[in-house]
Length: 297
Length: 168
Image (cartoon, rainbow over all chains, first blue to last red; front, top):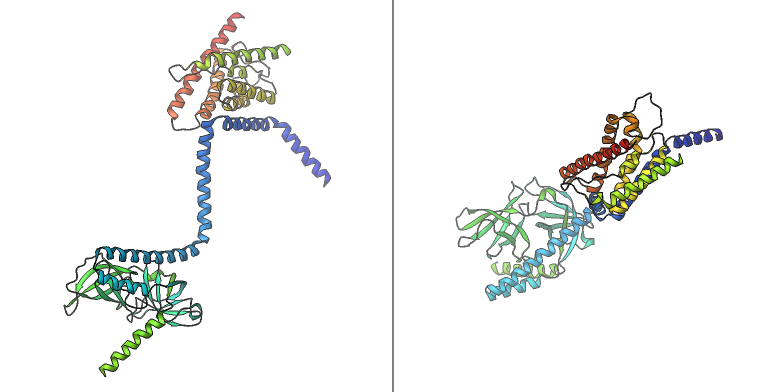
C-alpha cells in the first residue's frame, strides 16, 4: 500500500513537472485578474453588476424555495389581515357617510356598529367541503374548546363564507352561503338598500339578492356587503358584486344576481368571528320574538 | 547567453519607454493605438523554458500597465501571448526544424515572420481590448479599435525589423 502511495505521488509530481507552465499560467492570469478588479473601477463595477445579477437570481430562486415552506403561515396571516382591513374600510366609509349623509340614520347605524365591536378572529382551516349539493356544508378544524359556538360567522380573505351550525370539541360544521338554508341579510354598499342573500343550487359562484325595493337606485357592479342587522356578522363585510338585475316573480321588487367574492371551490384558510356577546344578543332577540308570538296567539 | 539576456532587457526597456512616453498618446483616427511592447515578448528565443516566457510576459504586461494606469489589462494579455507564442511560432516553422532561434525576419524570412507576427499580435490585441472593454455593448467599436491597432502595431514592428535588418 505504501509502495502504491509513493508510486501515485511520483506520477503526480511528474504530471506537475511536465505541465508546470500551465499551473504558472493560471496563477499569473489569476494575479492579473485580481489586479484588474482591484485597481480598475470600471471593470470592478461591471463585474459587481453582473455578480449582483447572478447572485440576486440565485437568492431569488433560493427564496422562492424557502418561502414556499412559509406559505401556509403567510396565507393565514393574509386572510386575517384582509378581514381586519375590510373592517377598517367599512368604518371609514361610515365616517365618510356621516360627513355627507343623514345624521339620524348614521347615528343609529353607528350605535349598531359600536355594539358589534369586540369581534376577535380565530384562524381555522376547512378540512372538508361540498359544493355540488343543494345543501352544502363545510367542516372546519376548530370546535367549542377553541371558543366556537353555533351561529358564529365564518369569513375568509375574499368575503363572507357562512355560519357555524354545529360544534364538537374540535370541529365545527358550517352552513356556507351555498346552502338553500342560508339567508344572509345584506345591503348594497353606498346605496343603503337591504335585501336577503340566498342560494338555490346551480352555479356555485353566484347567489341571489332578493327583496330590493323597486324604487331603489343602484347599478350593476355595485358591491354587496353584510347589513350588520344580524348578530352574526358586523356591518360592511364583503359578500359579492351585482352582476345582473331582474324583476322578482311578483314584480314588486328586484332580484339581483350576485357574483360571490369567495371561491368555495378552493377554500382553505378561514376565520371564525368570535363574538363574546353573541349569546346575550341572541337571547334578547329570541325574547322579543317569543313575546311577539304570544301576542299574536 | 548573458549578452542575449542584456540585449533582451535593453530592448524591453526601450520599448516600454517608447510605449509610455510616445505611443500611449497616439489614437490614430480615434481608434488605433500601437502596443509596441509585445515586440519584447516576441523576441524571446524559441526554446526558452515556458515558465521563463510566462514570467517575462507577465512582467512586461505589468510594467506596461503601470505606465497606462490599466492595472491587470496588459498583464493578462501578454501572459496569454507568452503562453501560446511557442505553439504559434511552430505553425510557421518547418516540422523538421529543431533549431533554437529568436523569431525575426532574418531567421524566418519576411513572409513567415509577417504571418507569425500578425497572428501573435492579433491574439494579444483581442484579449487586451476585450478585457479593457469588459463588455460587448459596443462590439463594433471594440473590433475596429482592435483591428486598427493590430495593423498599426504590426506595421511598426516590421519597420523596426526592416531598420535592424538594413543595419546588418
